[in-house]
Image (cartoon, rainbow, N blue to C red):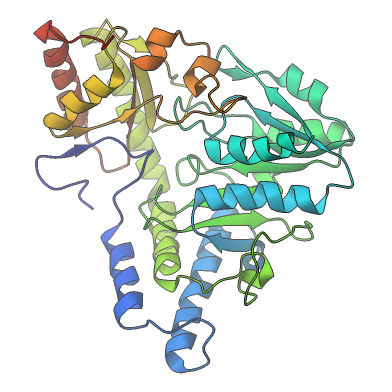
Length: 389
């Protein structure tokens, strides 16, 4: 699969990935030929239903779970919301405490904020020196904790969080808390199963693994009590009703199939590119402050160019046909306008405001990394780039 058309260097794969041609073709087929409603009993409907059944098996196999533990949604945000609201609503008589981290995606923090407004106690576990404060996590877990929600990979820095160790803390303290893991940035990049993590709820998304936007899934461990957030015809066993999007779900299943078949080779390539990028930054862009770590996810490099607003850098690179993202694009923390994720990691405001995130897929190349560094060096050597005041 080609990364992009000639002249474009796409290094924003944590935001979204280019869909596999095979996934696109399958989606188009289910929009134009096999377009029946999956609930219909005629042959077109049965064909759509069969595509969803196959995709459910493919996602389940990738997570090492049963197909009937997979619920399709519109994406990672809906899956996170369903995990948080569905589980807490079903267990509100058992307690009123939620634990999360200070660096979660807004799909988690903003959902949890609603419970805080309803009087629930929320513990935000800090990240100290790039590591989750496990002592604070252990102290927060109690018999009144209903849910612990921690992402697998931070979407901005690439930190990998110890989900299994959190599960062991919950068990050791004999807490009834469910463990939810937003695995959107880890799925297809890091090898894991639900059993490996010990998670009761796992969020995954199609468009982060070369599927089509608008589709995701939530793993719900068997016998986990959940309340639905919407009501209708009973699709997805009543937890997420509404006519299923067979084109997007079929494409998701195909993307999972291809991703898992190539994951070892793609992860090795992303790791090589990440390390090479870090080496070149240190060698040729000494002005850069490196925010991410080689111990983190294989596909993310985050760095700052203090004194230069990230929006200026992104625009310059875009004009050169190189696409990266503003590393501080999404805010996630205690208050509606609270500290940004990068500030929660301990970065200074100037570093946060100048942060860039480069994120790879398995089809990116060494030459693309070199072109990025060349473009950054040219930009810095202009001498007239200014952080807007």
